Every structure is written in structure tokens, then in C-alpha cells.
Length: 340
Ligand SMILES: NC(=O)C1=CN([C@@H]2O[C@H](COP(=O)(O)OP(=O)(O)OC[C@H]3O[C@@H](n4cnc5c(N)ncnc54)[C@H](O)[C@@H]3O)[C@@H](O)[C@H]2O)C=CC1
Ligand SMILES: O=C(OP(=O)(O)O)[C@H](O)COP(=O)(O)O
Image (cartoon, rainbow, N blue to C red; front, top):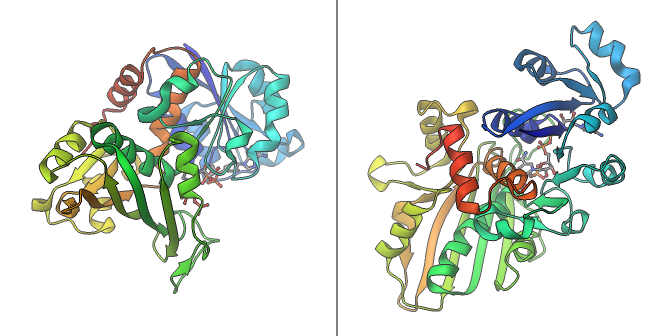
């Protein structure tokens, strides 16, 4: 069994913990928090040993009725690999301690590529992470872009990409972020970080991205245009998407034209936390122009799509599955996940 620790049990960390716990070849040996919270009670309830960043706060946790197993250093002694899901920018400072305790580490998209030197998406570059000590799973939007661009590139060759990300303002549980009543160009400069970030996984893709934030909490929406090198058809593209284990199709016949209806669908499917681990391509949006330009809309559940990628990154780094296909299949099956 691969012993996995999760440093930072928040939006991403708690989901990664549950996904790891569901895998037949992995176990959660600990999760960490900085202060008592609803999530800390749940960690106790699920039987994940709870470690804390600052051991001096142990009495505060215990007074709140939350059992503490030790500090983060204790947790690192028990694991083979740590998933760092601390807030963006915090994780890089943890590298020294991971090196000290000789554990492999995975960071999230809020950190820069340089922290690990390998940026990861299982459908694109599983082999780059095979046996590696340090890997970064790219951000939720970048994950969604990488999946679809790589698929199109393998089949048709991608000459260039232009995409606009309409980003959610805050996660549903967030109370500190906005906007409440604005469309914020974020960033106002072009390109946004997503294009260069795609190039950390797919270095040869010619891509420009723009991004804005809107007052919604569930999912980002991508508007994508790709110029293809070889002749493509709408049906051909839809067939490829149907076969992809991490890209789903929002059927035109379902009448779903929004993120809100997708949230309802995920809940009705009894997905844990209503999570959509797959990118959700709107069938009726998929169009091919006369010069082989591919157009589509896809929705990305920001809290979920990177979770399955973290599980595959663990397997690649631990050499527990030789190919991406093998790992993706194991991950999806353990979660009872097949793309919509
Ligand atoms: N929320 C999202 O939509 C997505 C986030 N990401 C990335 O995932 C990473 C984590 O983001 P979230 O889960 O949203 O953050 P979050 O704020 O929900 O959770 C972070 C957790 O880390 C804990 N923490 C803070 N400092 C710590 C420390 N020094 N040691 C141990 N734990 C500490 C906090 O208590 C909290 O539980 C970031 O790099 C972010 O950019 C990636 C994809 C999507
Ligand atoms: O990785 C994300 O977005 P990104 O791909 O736009 O960087 C997550 O939605 C976190 O974004 P946030 O930095 O607005 O919390």
C-alpha cells in the first residue's frame, strides 16, 4: 500500500484524501490543518489521523473536541508521498521539509512550475512523472485545457489555440472572495497564466488565453477555438471525446445549457459532494469551421477535476502503474466514475 499524507485539508485536500482512501493500492496516513474547522471534525470522523502545522495549537483543537495525532513532521515520517494542498504560494516553503524527511511531494496549480520542475496531467504526460520525486498538478483550468487540446492534437494536430476562461468568483464554501456584482478582467493583461501554464505540460502548443471572473461559485466556463492541421468533422471530434475517460459530453437532448443544471445533474447522480471530475463539453457547441477550426464550450468543476489527476500523479511517481491508461482506469473504477 502506498502511504499518502495530505498537507492542507481544505477544498482540494479533503477531496484528494477521500479519493486516495477509495483506491485499492493507497492509504491515507494523515491529513493536516492549521486551525479547528468543520473539516477537522470530518477528518476525525473519517478516521484520517489529523496533524497540525503548529503543535502549540494542540490544546485549542482538543478543547474543540478534535483529536490531534501530532505535528506535520510526525505525519511526514509516516508517509511515502505527500500531497501539498496548502493555499497557493504557501506550498513552496514546504519543499525543504519534504526533502529533509525524504518524501516525494505533489504540489497544486497555485504554485509555480519551478517548485517541482515537472507539471502534470495524466492524459498528457504521465511518463514525465514516472518515478519522479517532485511533481506539480496544474490548476483546474489548465487541467481542462490540457485534456481537450492534447486530444485534438493527437488526432488532428493543433496549429494554434485561443481560449477565454470565465472563472467562478469563489468556491461555494468561500466567504472572503468576490466579485458580488461585477465582471472582473482577471488578469486585464493578455495572456492570462493559463496559456503559458499549458505549455509547462504541452510545450509545443501555440496558445493564447484570456480570463475574467464572474459572480458564481460552481464551475468555470471555457470558450475554445483551435486551429487544426488536418481535416476534422464534428462527429469525429465528438467520437474522440466520448472515448476519453476524463472528458464528458453534456448531451444536447438533455436541454442543459448552464453550470447550474450541471450541478443539479451531479447531485442527482449521487456524485460525492456533487463533484464533476470530468471536463464537461457541451455537445451542441462542438462545431468545425470551413478552415478546420474547432469551436466548443466546456465547463470545469474547479474543486474536482484536479483530484483524479493527483491520484494518478501518486501512481506515476511511485511507479505503481506503468501507463496512464492503467492508472486512469484504476482511479476511475475505484471512484465509480465514468464520464457523463
Ligand atoms: N479551490 C480550487 O478551485 C482549486 C485550487 N487549486 C489549488 O489547490 C491549492 C489548494 O487550494 P484550496 O484547496 O482551494 O485551498 P483551501 O484554502 O481551501 O485549503 C487549504 C488548506 O490548507 C491549510 N493550510 C494553510 N496553511 C497551511 C500550512 N502552513 N500547513 C498545513 N496546512 C495549511 C488550510 O487550513 C486549509 O485547510 C492551491 O494551490 C490552489 O491554487 C487547484 C485547483 C482548483
Ligand atoms: O486553479 C484554479 O483556477 P485557475 O486555473 O484559473 O488558476 C482554481 O479555481 C483556484 O482559483 P483561485 O486562485 O481563484 O482560487
